[in-house]
Each structure stands twice: as structure tokens, then as C-alpha cells.
Image (cartoon, rainbow, N blue to C red; front, side, top):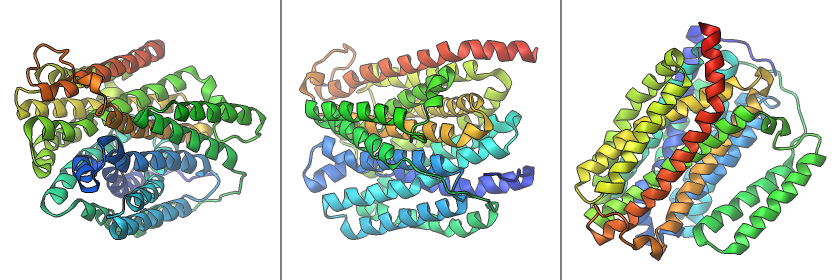
Length: 462
């Protein structure tokens, strides 16, 4: 499909309006985070079950991102966006009507994820196609700021609504985003699309395999892990025999691309799990109400996203990916270390940790998006960027589900860190060791894969 290139003014208008939809779509991903303990109490369920409120959204969001990215070159973007936003609204209405029924609420979150995923997948493809490569760092930085700010503001809004009204009202807020839809559809260019076969079998095998793995990370029943592995093996055989597989084999032959995707998945999944843990932490250690958790603990972190997201894009264009990634990793590590050693010393330290973590996450998202984009040819943008978004959102869902399961593990209650004196805080401090290990591994993977590429770029520029 051929898309007419925008001039700077047209590109700015497009990104502005689509940024509005992006903000609401990603905010819904985390808006329920601060309310997970309340949902657990409302239904009388464990944290591992309550966390599926977010996990169900994230998994369907991830699958949707992959599907939209896959077919964006063959079906008009206007049709895809319209379908996605209407599905998003449909899920919100179901949530309002069925919030008192746990399966109904999960169904609503599933449809919300399917619909909301249309926005980020389409905007990432458009940036690669219509924005000059020399300006893509700033463009990704801007969208990264919108995404990170939406994800960060979600718990603040969710905490206020849940604390002063009721968490079920959160289903009504996404309906506001539909007001921007006519403006976006008017700005989107006309396209000549062509029909192409879609690998439904591959999509189903992958989706069910992911679901089985997510259930394993929550329930720790080996039958789910076995089923997941079996489905992935079937998927591998299917890809070899299919002429147009759901997962593009050529993407897995690009070492730098694979490393970038794995890095994004590891780091974003780790941070998502950490953020999902914070509301449980604040209630268990400091007995803080839901509204105060969102406003005083998570809100300072959301403010840092605006600044650091833009700085990340500028720093990436001027100083390169390695320096920017190291800066982001250092901030995330510092935030994690505060929780690890000084969890029970005061709520303000948790707020400082959130500032560092959200700020570092903005840098990481910008670098991963820009770095992966450079490994792709123009005709690979749809599949490649869609797969990146798919992996990252999928990892976030699995990270949230895994944290719900870890919160129920008794062996994590032991006092391993000497500086943590409260017994109730030991569980959360010990979990930081897992987060630290995952963050270090993800950062090391990126640096090893991209150091040689960065050195070549610097030599060529000099």
C-alpha cells in the first residue's frame, strides 16, 4: 500500500490527533492498576486473580497490535481505526453493565484491549513511513512521552475515581476518546488497499499458547506450561509450511532486530510488573488509601515522563542510542535499589523511586523503538513495528500476571535484606531482586547487540 508523505505541518497535525487517541488507549492499560487491591476485596479473590483485570487487557492488546500491524498494509487504516475504536467503546459499555460479575468484567477488558490496540500499532507504522529518518528520534520521543504519560497518569485517575466514587466508573472514561475519532479519520490519507490472505491458524495457535503461559505464571500448574510449549511447537511447524505465516520468519533472522524486541519486552515487562506491585505494597506496608496511592505516590512519576520522554528523543538523535539507553537503565536501577533497601523508611522514598523508574522507562521506550526501526526496510515496517509492539505489550501483561502469582508465594516472605526491618515489607523487597536481575539482563542484551552498530554509525558520521 502506498501512503502519501506528509509535510511537517501535516505530520504534526496527524501525530497530535492520533496522540490523543493513543493517550486514552494506553491510559486504560494502567488505569485499573491502583484499583487491583480494591477489586480483589470486592470479589473476594486473590491478587493473582485480581491482576487478570489488567492481564486480560494486556494480552488482547498485544494480540491486537500484532494483527493490526500485520494487515495495516492490506486494509485501509481508516477501516482498521474505526473498527478498533468502536470495539473499544463496546468493551467499555459491557464493563459498565457487567462490572459486578467477574467473568463479565474480564470479557469487557478483553474487548477493550482488542479495540484500543489499533491506535499504537497504526501510529508506529505511520512514523516509520512518513517521518524523515533524521527526525524519527524526536517523533518516537514525542509518542513515547504520550504513551508513558498515559500509562503513568492512568493509576492517578484510577486512584481518584476508585477512592472517591467506585472502580467500575473507570469503564466510562474511555468513551471520551471517541470524540476525537472524527478528526483523526478526516486527517488520515486515502489509501489503495488490497486484500491478502491472513494466517488465522497461526494467530490462534500463538494466542492460545500465550494464554496458557500467562496462566502458568499465575497458577504455577505445569499442565499450562506443557500446553503452551506444545502449542508453540505446533506454531513453529505451521510457520515452516505456511506461505504467508502470522509471524514473519525473516524478522527472526535479523539479529539486531530480535535483540531490540527482546530488550523491549524484558524491560517493559519488568517495569509493568513493578508498577502493578506498588499499590499492594503501599496498602500492606503503609495502609494507604487508593486515592492517595495514585495522587501522592504515582503522580510524581507521571510528571517526570513529560520531561524525560522529550529529552530521550533529543539525546538519542544527538548522542546515540548507547548513551541514552545507559541513562535510562541507570535511572531504573536507582529506583529499584531504593525499594530494595529502603522500602519501609517512608512513603516519599517510594515516590522518588517512581520518578526515577518512569523517567528511565521513557528513555528505554524511545531507544527501543528508534533502534528497532533502523533495522527494518520500508516494506518491513508494518510487520516489524507491529511485532515490536506485540512483544512489549505481551510482556507487560505477563509481567503483571507474574507479579500476582509471586505475591502469593510464601518463600518470598523471608527476611533476605538486612536494611528492611518490617516483616510485611520483606515480600516486596525480595521481589525487587527478581526485577533487578531482569533489568540487568535486558540492558546487557541491548548493549551487546547494538554497540557494534552504534560504533559504525559514529564512524560514518565523523
